[in-house]
Image (tube, rainbow, N blue to C red; front, side, top):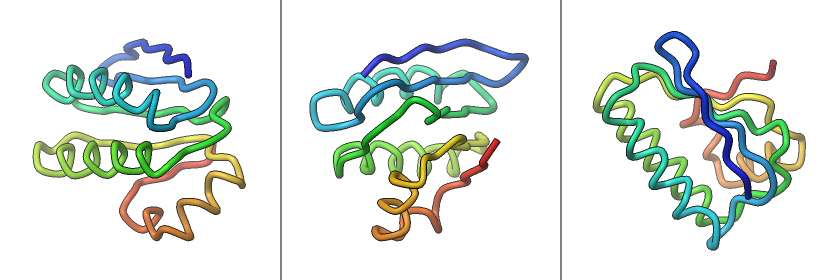
Length: 101
């Protein structure tokens, strides 16, 4: 998985490309932890993400929990129908703020 990160005003945007799985999830987790300490808004762009495993889902839930505690706006955008099915089957979609752009 490739992660591109940029800051737009007070929002940090992560563009994810590839597969978010047990091998790549620790990289995203480390990147998110750095930003969760300093950003007011975090957006994950899933436009080019093709797969999310249970390890990836765990990272998303941890980030959501931390952001909720600290008052950070955490959103996910451009979720493909395949990944949305995973979110819905695991009921994670009810916890995450998902926006289709």
